[in-house]
Image 1 (spheres, rainbow, N blue to C red):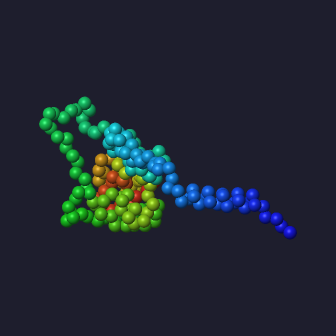
Image 2: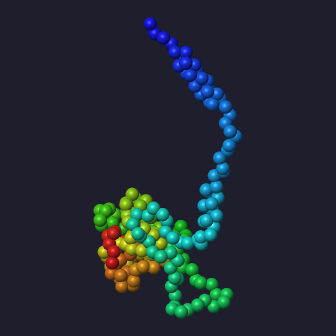
Image 3: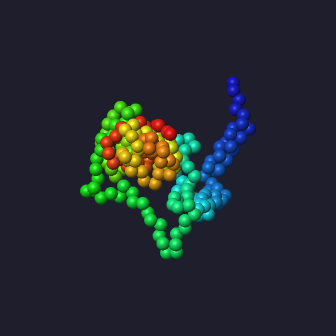
Length: 194
């Protein structure tokens, strides 16, 4: 014979009713505070001056150079009042009818591709599926450096806003693929730094 404990049944029914009542109740009326994290981020960002710092997620650990490098020119020279600094024209702004195409052999990749004169070597190599090294994409470091095996770099490419290589290094064939626009056929060894 089994005995049913009335106290146990009563306690079970009471706990069940209490759980149902809590479940169906509308709560205390408390509401969480508004999320202000985006507002805080925007306020903090407004206090930081804009820079030309390289894009995030680059492939070079510690790559890049100091943002805001000093513009070249005669040492100690200053612009006269009302005089505008002359802006170098980018090969990327070349009119369509002036674009030329050149055969460029990528020695280490074992392939030759046709490159347009209005796009950088790095951009066109990546468009062809090559995994080429880079970091700043602004000609301020040597992560994308390569060596033109046919002779002085300036005979085969136009550098736009290159700030790292010396004239002697370019004479030896070194180039920065992120700011180098082809102007002749040549062979190049990527990943070669001076």
